[in-house]
Image 1 (tube, rainbow, N blue to C red):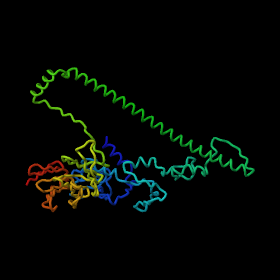
Image 2: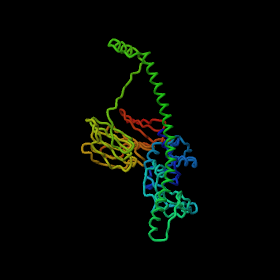
Image 3: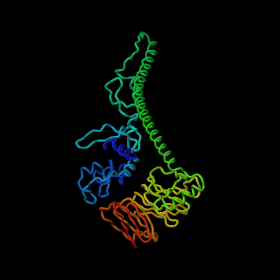
Length: 424
């Protein structure tokens, strides 16, 4: 269901309707074919991400010259794009086409709101700056919703409505009641039109409520069926109540080598604090480290419950994808292509450097060496000097090295369809 919602959110508006607030700074999310921020991003068989429409118009991948074939939708990138801020479409003047170019100009009287892409359509459906026709059908068709009430007072097509009245205008004293009465009638007309719109909205909500009731009844029926099956299972396999019965069951289970044990997990708490997706975790005896798309690394106290955030480490310009720790020194890799070094005694940044030309997907360490992976590349660093010791380029068909694991003297790197093994 979540994947379906992401796909729908990317299809609500045309590409031309979306104007990002900081598009020039969002290069990690730009398609290398159309040079714009991804629209319905998909992963091709060569492991790269492009707009779905671009894969149908281009033949060869611009990175490795392989034939473009769509493999799967990139829901992770789509989720991050949905958090980018965009302008409401009513913040701009009506587009004017000049030759093959579309001229877009900010309207100083337009909507000033910046919203996440995911909420763009929802906002625009209710935006008070949206253009609506006059309810009286006058020539002024491009009226903003917030100005309708004031317009009705001066609308050339306004009518006395259902009320007939005769006002004697022979003297100045009758002018004031006449103006007040016209104003009241205009307000009544506005309220009548508003009530008609609300009536339609209420009807739609009632239909949605009826649908929810039907779904609830179906769920209740399903629940009753499952409960009935559970009761039947209990009757055919009664739960042992006496000590002798329980001992007999344990002996029987130990004799059955094919019997699988059941592990019951119980939630002991929740860490709350990040404002976006959490991509990586690293646990020590006393603390837990977490990296997130909100560009931070958080350090959590594991010795006390409820779990609390000891400190938040800032510095990365993009989301944090990977973490590893050597004694009391932590390393974090980010979408901004850099690696930061942190001292866990005072929680200060001790060093940082650009490690790759693409996001740092994973980190691990072994024998005073730091290993980092990215697009078709595994690098080895000296943990003391942070100097590059070795660089291993992988086959372009394998794409990104997304996960690293160390075991004995070997480093295992997971990529598309295969696992690469490098041993010292």
